[in-house]
Amino acid sequence: MIGSIVVGYTATQAGADALALGARLARGLGMSLHLVIVLPSEGTRNAAVPPERAYEDHIRSQAKAWLRDALSQVPQDITRSGHVRFEESFAAGLIAAGEEFGARLIVVGAANGSTFGRHRLGSVASELLHSSTIPVALAPAGSATHTRIDTPISRVTAAVGTRPGADVLLEEAASLAAASGGALRLISLVPFDVPPGLDTGAITLVRNVHGDDVLSQAKASLPAGVTAEVERASGDSVEDAVAHLPWQDGEIVLVGSSRLAQPRRLFLGSTAAKMLHELPVPMIVVPRTRATDISTEGDQA
Image (cartoon, one colour):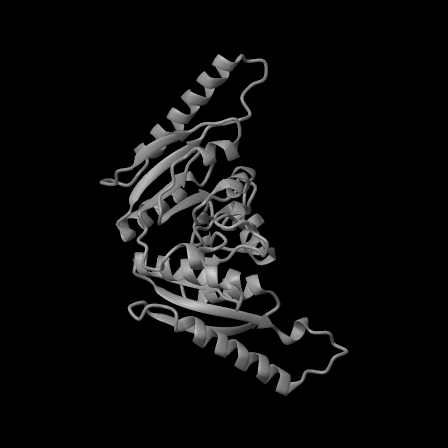
């Protein structure tokens, strides 16, 4: 599979989690790995404080030392490199690095204080999800100790719907499954905003019919020769539905960006945000349009 993976690295637990997931994805997908530390650019410093060359040299040297240590933990069979970048924000630096290296994914860890094995968005992840043209992979807290780098990608799950961008999501999920050798699963999180006034039986019927219809359309839209299992997740809430789905070791889940997102940009919708509360596996958020697409809507944004 052509492409590379950019990891937003820091010498913290979140950085270790991002490194672990990035290395596992790089190995499983046959991609190269780029570890990137982003340091604040000169323009972000207080103008009243004169730049100290010795200090800049010190933090650059420290960052390179952190990268050497991190790269030493990556198996030798994975092509990897470390980079120090200066940018106004960590997220902007990662996006620029991703575009420079032709990245298929940008990987970041969970925010401090996250529950082990779960997700919590920090400022960098939130900024990426509002601005990246490249799919963003979110590593659950504890990935560095919970999952081995040599754990294969056992299954790729796509949370599908009928909104714009579903075709791009399916194409990306099928591509990742083919590259990794993992199974492909399509799930539909049935709607929880069914018409009011229906009795319990009618609500169940509406949900079942909608879920089956979405999955049938998605399966029919898969590229020729690609097969997938389908599963309809039901529950009293999105969180409840996700909690009752079976998840495998080594699994990853893909979701599309919100319909409110600008073309070729990410934005985490309400359903995906709710999924994060219960999701025990890495989540990849995919832009609803490809970075190379050109549209009138995008020109007007």
